[in-house]
Amino acid sequence: SLKGKTAIITGSNSGIGLGVAHELARAGADVVLNSFTDNDEDHALAQEIAKEYGVTARYIQADMSKADQCRALIEQAGTCDILVNNAGIQHVSPIDEFPVEKWDAIIAINMSSAFHCTAAALPMMRKAGWGRVVNIASAHGLTASPYKSAYVAAKHGVVGLTKVTALETAQEPITANAICPGYVKTPLVEAQIPDTAKKYDMTEEEAVQKVILERQPSKEFATVEQIGGTAVFLCSAAADQITGTTISVDGGWTAL
Ligand code: NAD
Image 1 (cartoon, rainbow, N blue to C red):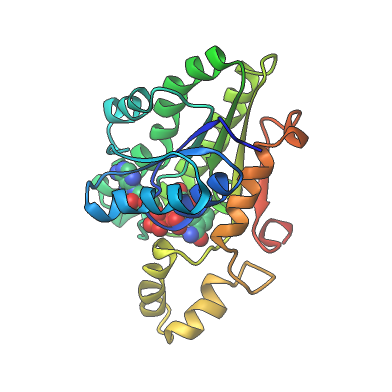
Image 2: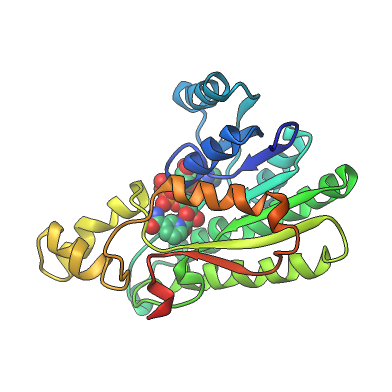
């Protein structure tokens, strides 16, 4: 059980982050939810988790595109046994047309936030004598697709950061690993369906089966519960010697 552990999940008012928060709370962890907004609905998500699993759950607003706000999130939480670096955005465009501000935002949110949050969390894990860093990378942390230059670069960067974090904590009771999901049906992916359909001149249904799931041999989306379950496993004692590696949850994508 993760009772008594505090998990901070960045970018967790939606999709995979929210799913991971639910699974960690189900396993007994207290959770800190985060996004850049500060709406009643955000705080309500934390209240629902607290009620459903009998844990402490808080929502803390912080913009993961800003270094100081990343570090402030961890400081404000006060303690961090489990850090899940999950916040992420996507933009699809050829390199020569890729908007510079989108490149900068994706590198900041998808990659640099993991660095800043890890930097702030490691001293807390050392003080507690136990820690887990779980980075939500992607199949695009291991392979590439056209038109996703910033995303693929950031996710490869996250996999590299994961390895360095693992080496710097190798002789301590702290591990760092990356989960590499294939396609998971979340708002991030749903937003790509119309664009993909337009780009390939297909119906949205065809775009899902022929383009989006083209490289996912299972031809099924992974679920947020499966990503959350993988995070819970990485936080278990069975995973004490698993560090600096990636776990793909991708329906066979990286076997192709
Ligand atoms: P999503 O859009 O549902 O969730 C993204 C989360 O990040 C949201 O909670 C959003 O509020 C938050 N976020 C965005 N910008 C932020 C900022 N500046 N500061 C703080 N939070 C911010 O998407 P998702 O699919 O759940 O993606 C979550 C992570 O999983 C991302 O890192 C994504 O790259 C990764 N991933 C997703 C898939 C997939 O198929 N959905 C596959 C592989 C990896």
